[in-house]
Length: 244
Ligand SMILES: Nc1ncnc2c1ncn2[C@@H]1O[C@H](COP(=O)(O)OP(=O)(O)OP(=O)(O)O)[C@@H](O)[C@H]1O
Image (cartoon, rainbow, N blue to C red; front, side, top):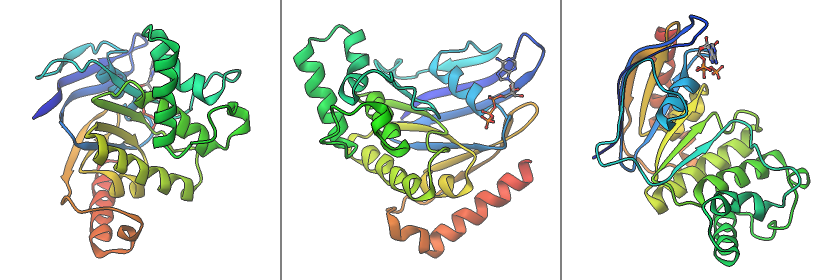
């Protein structure tokens, strides 16, 4: 079942930069689709178009089953309110939706717990590590129980270990909640690990250069040491090299 379909997307900014041309791709329900490409090939622009934050100058964004009630967006920067505690940051979308305090706090607590942050509800962002701040940001995106999570290089600023842990947490959340994920990265390792399907973009203007579908195998820390992972990584590397 197709959740989101982008058809013939082109985008030219007012300054004349052609960021995207003829991009067509679809996200299936429950799928994790990675968008991989060199810096500047239009990944963020495409994600913003999918979110409805930017109207494409060409093509169509379609939701065959109707636009989800909630879409979660996670940016590279956690974008937390520095003066507000973790619980309040996570509860923000519920406050904006007008939910009563007791309900929004209960749901924010549950979202923090799902991201391994039980006990940190009262912490201010500056009292947390970079990885923990990113978890708060993901909890905020999940608190509305979105059907689709749009993630724009969310772990690029983290160390490798934190990044690998969060990769596993995204897969666990996807397994537990069936949330679909469109995940932008320029990391080959991350895309080879996370993706059910991988779309490689070529730059100037951004367009689809290759699409790889990976076997549905269980991931987990041991997966990175398997021949199956090495094969995925080699395929992704070859596709990215050919696109650049
Ligand atoms: N608001 C804007 N006005 C003009 N040009 C823009 C604007 N935003 C992005 N661009 C240009 O569009 C192209 C695609 O940018 P975009 O940020 O989508 O790429 P990206 O693949 O996400 O890059 P990165 O991996 O570095 O984040 C780039 O050439 C960029 O300079």
